[in-house]
Image (cartoon, rainbow, N blue to C red; front, top):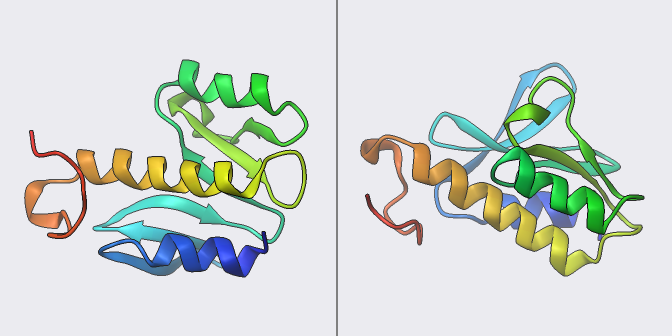
Length: 118
């Protein structure tokens, strides 16, 4: 899977839009929140709690790692083109999107997202 394919998948999500909040750092946002850090060699995603994110590291020790600064909140970096199958990376992007959408105020949630309303 290429970085462009990862970005296309992330940005195809309802309400998703590209941003470059820091020079050279490309991200996918929904509402005003980042759900994916789009790198040339990997993607940063929210995978739930730190315990849930650690399961990815245990399963893919050569391809998953804790993201600097925000890793304690369940964010991992997943390497592209290596130890993690493409379908697992796409699933991780989907999970990150759904977790972030669920935390958005209702007015910022995209109307066609499959996030449950609470």
